[in-house]
Image (cartoon, rainbow over all chains, first blue to last red; front, side):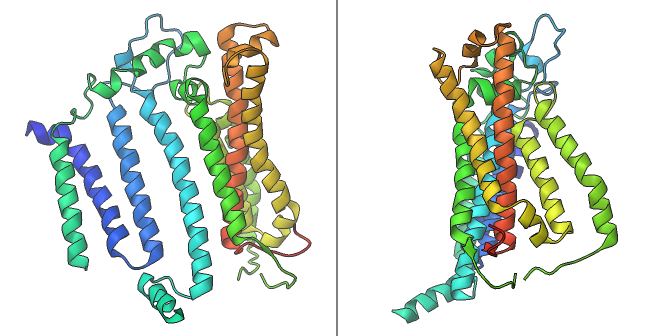
Length: 124
Length: 94
Length: 151
């Protein structure tokens, strides 16, 4: 019981991550693969944010009038910073991936992985 | 093929769940992540940077070089999108 | 591929909402020191307001006013502001991106100088993020097609 209460958040992120992982390796449609990659990245972001959390702590915006600052009172700002940058990288990789997929669709008129490989084999 | 993928996914998930047994509990104030460097950031942010929001001061001041690389990454993404898709045409069919 | 879609309700609501969204975006960028916010978030909200405009109105008309060339200049301008601030710090005798070097130019408290440097680079990041969002959206929706008058 102690283990379940302490670790259940990690298990939620692991199940989310595995949904994304399955979409990346089992789906044939390229757009579905990209959506799986996004779910995977979201799971990692949630994991990092949850490591920043401390019990009975508040957001890392300090009260200016406070004389002595107790670090246990504020949650850890470092994972928030790292994930803020990771979200932007996620958006830019998504944009570039969609651009590449659009060019692939223009070239082969399909988004299915196997059909693209078939067309490539016929060309040889 | 799909069954094979499912087996791989379940095995990876099982390994990850097993590894969480060594992780610190959720909301533990004494976890290693919140003991090493973040107390210094929280204690010194008003004194050194006059910024009550610790996230902003770490993002732009203490780790500004990281954010510069970040900005360059999204700059590169926009340039790649333009290079891949852009073309100039005469016809008016958009 | 994209057809003109004139809807009075949508266009009127957008006309009212877009200035408010942009005002809120500037608030998020400028107030990032004291509340949740900063360059990335404010830039995303600002970009979203432009994307709303592109959805609601005629995309070709907007593109003639907010052209690709100007957008690329904005993308580069944000990164340029950021790198220039770092370079100025070297020229003033401190390390790269150590904003306390600006104390030689603006003689106030060292913590206040660092907050000022943070604000400048947040503005640079905001400009870049806004222009990148609009640029990626435009290129993906119009397939990167440009007529000769638009570029």
